[in-house]
Length: 260
Image 1 (cartoon, rainbow, N blue to C red):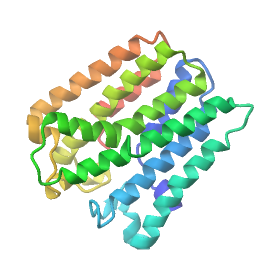
Image 2: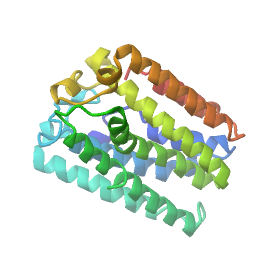
Image 3: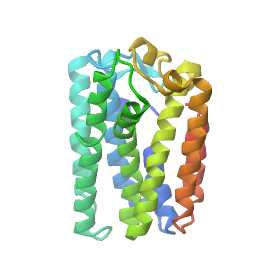
């Protein structure tokens, strides 16, 4: 568990929790437990995603994948344990930090983002789409669920902890939706033009696994144009919140321009 958690990575999801709380002028450390829980879920998904029965990858975050070091069985259990522990961490947020109602809301929404309505459902659709020519709508469904839902929960968690009103939650959720698509489009682009040493994982895996991608459906230039459009829409929704979204804007730029 520790091997994969401490392997590095972009930490975009925890950053989104902290930056959202900061937008409300509150201490970002109030989101530490939620941020840790989300990163545990993300890391568990990577461990399982790399298994031979899934994408069968040898490299993650610049290091050998979990199953290459500890074997398939222990890697599977490490992922299971991280998923389970993430809910324990959320459930143990102190009463003087958030209300019981907010804690319950966080637990329910994280379960939805990680489960059949979110990441796991998207992963199943992704696997079933291998070797098929998907439409752009089908590809977006996969990415909204596989990647976007957990990114969206990262923003929602920060908003709930900060006590956001419904209008702010709606604008922040729309921001997260477009950010999630931008994130995945850039990921697809990097799988084509990225450097393995810079991005910390094998490039060309989408082609190897016969997956539909944005560059494949739209061309590389078309994918870059789609990335710019989703980034613009993400920022436009941030502007609607009336909050100090400087850090969220910076994260959006990081997602759109990242090399790793």
